[in-house]
Length: 141
Image (cartoon, rainbow, N blue to C red; front, top):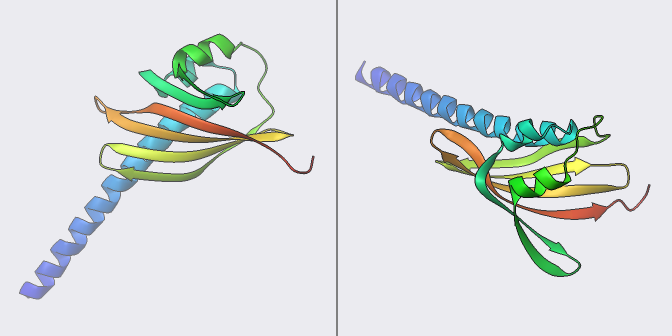
């Protein structure tokens, strides 16, 4: 009987941990989708929900390392307009405690962006704190 109770307790604990992990994964995906949907729909207010105010975006431009504030960058380039013709996908996601890392693909007709996002849970909310990316041309159009 004691063994049955112990086994039941272990199963309940494992199930609780799995539910908590799943809830955190879903919360991170919600933040990533603010970024993806905001960009697809040219909706800066939605996109901005994904980023911490001090989030950075780092990339190579004309062979040189470039670092900018992510929100300021998107504010400058994003203009209201029709929905963009692109497909988006979360390729991978790793969540540990209050830190997460994701790889995203944003696919256009002739090229894709591969985004690597670092997120932290800040004041109970998941926020992107840094983004690096690579623009990859498609070999066959």
